[in-house]
Length: 436
Image (cartoon, rainbow, N blue to C red; front, top):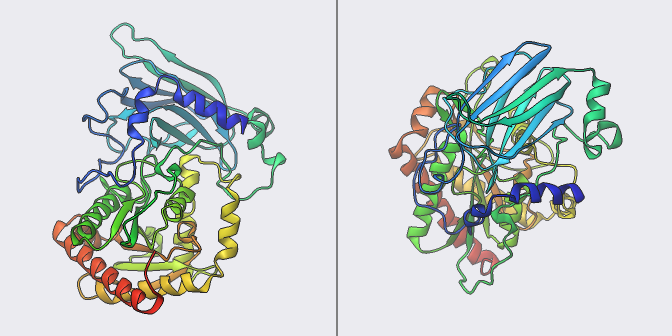
């Protein structure tokens, strides 16, 4: 708790403007498309943030330097993580204006690096390393001799013993059980999930739309198209169509390019007493596994329906690890969620909606050859909210990708979803009484 408090103080320093960004989920912008991969276009919401204009690596397998060009000096905090080997750099919110593909190619001790928002007011850079390293130097240079201010980090190769000793006590592998690859350092989650439940006089059912990934987590990618942007555009279009019907209330877990931890996505649905949770994703199949196409609808299950469902759930459940969020100190409600999965009514409603959604979507969009699947998705584990995860297509498939960027296709798919929602609530009201 002490480390969390210190971290929160750090991110709060000099970031008074960040408070204006923490807005209610319901007040989302109406833009249909999200920002481009790895960059934030300068607009009214980013104009006052520091700008990162370039990033590069230099050196070899013994010593490697990272340089980030900025338009002003910033504060930062850098720390290593084990299993897998990483270095995380927390900085104030930055407007990344880096070339497409920056960070995908490594050098020396760095295999690759990624960057983006992890919370309103805070950005993060995560380095995937080839092995154990120490942060030999880390500093910010003033602008000089025509060069901009720069954030510089020097990595040096070390043995594992030295590396582990450099970790914060709570992050040392020998001091806690190894739960998964997602053993990482804590960051306070300042998201809309922290909003208290709102006293609601509107009796219309509440639907939560959850565009996957966001911020530092791009999700899958094909060329300049990222999953986080494709599903955000789809989610915003679905929200607008549901709003237009006037039959339901609707909120989004994210309405811009912000990272939201998995547990916070679940918490939003639970604290707002949602009647339905719809998570939107777009899968990609590794080339070695061939090709796949079409939309797939997932419900939660302790046992995956097939190997592909298990692979996808494992990948999606690592979203927090990608952004460096601590998974070792989950709130006790997570344990309760795992126990409460036995609640048959919620699972029954989830399965019922999944079947209705499949029936509607198959008449308008291409579906996977096995369109209904199940696996242990963390984001679907609210015990009291019917939940589905919809993979609207494969960004790794040329035909699917053409659909995913097509406004005409999106309108058809959104229309099918809204029709399924209407049918679901009409039957639920008839058989189970008024919805929440």
